Length: 280
Image (cartoon, rainbow, N blue to C red; front, side):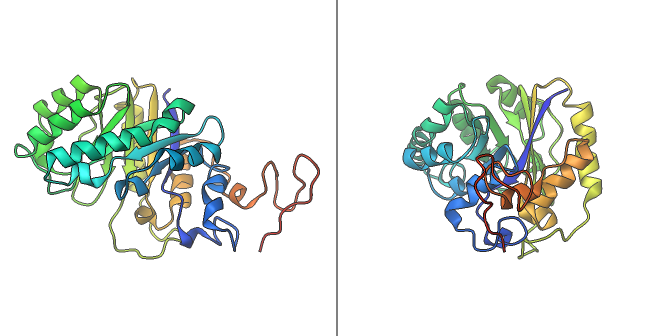
């Protein structure tokens, strides 16, 4: 059975303070607390700005040894029209990931293309970026337009060993191709919700459909990555818990984000006997 890495798309959401992080938690503690519950995260912030090595080093320092980061390539690479400028951003992006890679915490990097990106007009850009990301980096490619669901696209992804992202996004239904040694699934949803502090939808049929895909099409891979966006059900941590339940995985202990390091229960002592943190 493939090893499953399940997590959220991002960790820095103010709406999680209260239902997930303790009230009053400063943003600088979010990642450390998130990593007490989940062992992987998809970094959404890098889609908007290129990470620097010092920033990536802080991520390494604030997470446990077997934690993994899946990292989105900046949109200037996937959405920009200037190929030379995009290549420069991609090079800086890869340099910024060096601390993650050297620590063993770098998971797949993700090329997230817009819905307007279509074949055959985007063929050259897709091919250039597939070649531009060194094969040493696991690569996932999110294509959202049906013009890409062709044998030629599958051949290109297989030739690079890049995973086609299995996206659950409105108006998108990518085929369950296995084009890499891993599978990468994203539960994205629409943009109608604006608060992200609780589960607000029932999309169990989508979760069941993905479970079937994992069990049927993904049997041959070694690893499955699955990430939940807040917009899918309204609350990322709760969505991951629902996904884990659908897959028959042990449920994540969401209360661990509110506990001190090593505490087994809220209000219980830490391993060194120090008093527990206060929680409001």
